[in-house]
Length: 158
Image (cartoon, rainbow, N blue to C red; front, side):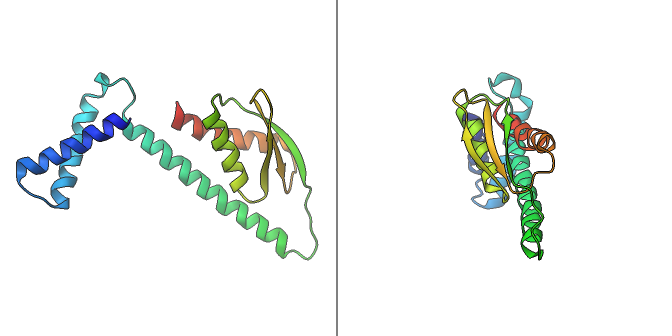
């Protein structure tokens, strides 16, 4: 992926040299022409087209920000109620993620979301133990995490 980005930047600078124009418009047009060339010749690269990974990263960021806002609203609702109506608890999430980077990212995203906290990762790195502020059904929470964060992390890393 890094090779593709560097190659795209080189194409953009060569375009600026050929046009003898040193401005952002010339660079942007060269970058877009480089993207077009990279897309046409993507089968000659060993890795996937880097724009696909970039979209996956942006999707993961957007997903995290959405979950962050929704969980903030849920926590604020609980705080502002006169009587607490929560059922805190700990549940286990068995993950399909394989390498350390993927598991760490999932654990961090869960911990950064208000109302949840990753307590521990098992020795075999297949199970995460998560504390949640309000658990109605642990299976629903597991499926929600697997369907959102875990799926998006897989798209970024694989």
